[in-house]
Image (cartoon, rainbow, N blue to C red):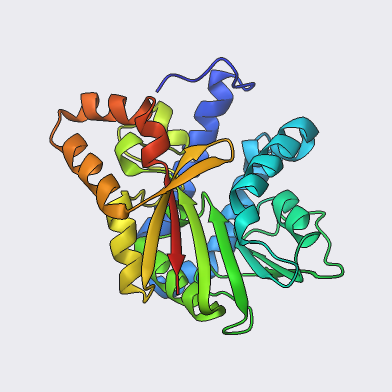
Length: 279
């Protein structure tokens, strides 16, 4: 992909971000499972220290963009929120959205691996922060009504993604819901390596198709999955099998052409993986 004109950083700064992220991601890819549990916090903190103009950090300074993003996310999750809801967000970033949810529910847990990205966020009232090793979900078992993550699962080593998913399942109440948003591999890569490589080589350690995700969720114990399609807070629910058929058709096309179709409208709205899984 070409670097878009709206990117405020110079080509050299984007390239440096790519170089640093790829270096750190390679450490995770080559580490054992026990080593990774100690590394996630360290490599993400190092990334944000070495790339001070990282979009996740600069977004904290852009109040207008933050308000727009929070509003769109609220439109998506509002049907699942009630005053008595216990809400869990995994990978909350600057916590702007988790804090907005906290004003609407009984309790919010926000867990992340990076102290740097959580810098300045304070625990208060019904809002509780916790650190994770990338797999753990340190909340009371069977306590959560709604778990939510956006652009998280692709950042985990595949073995750790499975472990974390099982831990989220354990955190949910019977009948609880996990809403997981992650980019589709068929339109990727989606990390900073999209400007330089054909597959994700940065902190997107694995990008998934909807078929791969629904199979993974069911193997972790979730009894029912549906796919939300749409954007900007307007979504419809589809059976996973319909999205699987579209993905299958794209894989039969030449890779470059299939990826071009997947990145364009309307398929971008269909393939952007928003999985709603019920325990």
